Structures are given as structure tokens and as C-alpha cells.
Image (tube, helix red, strand yellow):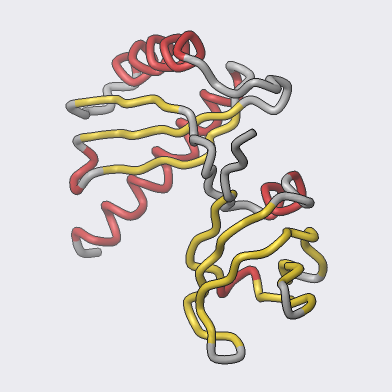
Length: 157
């Protein structure tokens, strides 16, 4: 087994470990970014029951707890960053696409659909592994596995 597969397994196990730890605190792990060799761990957290979003106190609580847990588990890293996912929150899991139905999103496909890779529209939800999106030209059903990235479009009042 080469170095790349070992690093991949390490990252997957670390992500699962961090996700369980964050969920145990009552938060959702939206995304985890790791620098090469895992020296910087950047977490984006959310909380379903918190209407106003994540604040600095939430980030501090998760950071302090994870710092202690990572030390106890002897996980070597240089820096831990904990943040909110922001107004343009990424949508990664099926549950995200269901939760934010009715919201405007921007998504980019890996492989073009009808000659396009970028779409902006109103998210209708997920059905049979396809994200339903209401566009100006009508409804589109896009394969979930073909989505490279998707983000909420921020609304300012």
C-alpha cells in the first residue's frame, strides 16, 4: 500500500472521528478541510436548532473540546480552525439538499448537462438520487453524483 492510500484512510478515519465528536456536542460537521499531510484542520460547523447560525461562542466551544480530544487521541496537527459555514453554506449531503429545499442555490457539475456545468436556481429537493432545481427555463433534474460543488446563494434583506 503506497503513501497516498494510507493518507486517504487516515483522512477518512479522522473525518469520521471528528464528525462523531462534533455531533456529540450537538453540532453538525458541514465540511472538513485538511492541508497536505493534515497539518491544518479547518472545520465548518452548523447547528440545526439554532436559527441565527453559528457564533463565536459555538466555535470556541467546539475548538476547545476538539483540542483536548485530539491531544488525548495523540492526533498530530499544527493548527485547528473552527468556523461557521457562512451565508453561502456548501451543500454536500443528501440531507443538505432536502433541508434547504426552497432556497436559491448555485451548483457546478463535473460533467455538463445539456451543454452546461453551472446552474443557479431554486432547490426543489432530492428524488431518486437527483437534485431537482427550478430554473428560469423550467425544472432540471441533476444527478447527485455529478455535482462537483453546490452552495446556497446568500439573501440580504
